[in-house]
Each structure stands twice: as structure tokens, then as C-alpha cells.
Image (cartoon, rainbow, N blue to C red; front, side, top):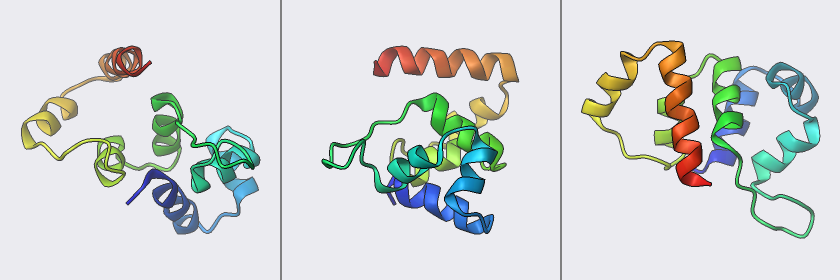
Length: 105
């Protein structure tokens, strides 16, 4: 499943329209539409959302970030890595996210 369909599924599971979901997540409803369609603009340029935005969506939807990344095809499921992630506290998790963002950018 791609990340756009996954975000749309999370929104629909909460029975929310794009505007309400945008308020919940803390982004504009236009950006929700872009995320769900995986398009940056009307010309069809692909959208590459930041890890921070995806994490924010998961946090606000009470959805496992690791599960999101696996379902969206960003990472392969790894029992060993999953065990390590579950041991991280919030500060450690934020450091890992910053590190991953620095690698991706």
C-alpha cells in the first residue's frame, strides 16, 4: 500500500472529512489532499512528505509509526529492529527521527 492510501484509510477510520482531519493533525486540508493523492501540485509532481509529518499523523491518529512505515513500503518488517524501537523513550525516538531525516535529505 502506498502512503497516500494509508493516510486516507486512517482518516476514513476516524470518520473525518479532510478539514477535520487536517485540524487533528495540524496541517492544512489542502496538504491532506496532496498527501492522499501523493501529488505536490495540480501538475502532478510527486510529493515527498517529511518523516516528521508522517510521524505527526501517526501520533495524532494513535497509530504505530513503525507499522505505518512498513505498510507504506518504506521499510521491511524486522523483528529485531522492532524490539529496539519499542525500547526507545520519546527523546531517543526524536533523535532517531532527526538522524533519519538528515540521511534522507
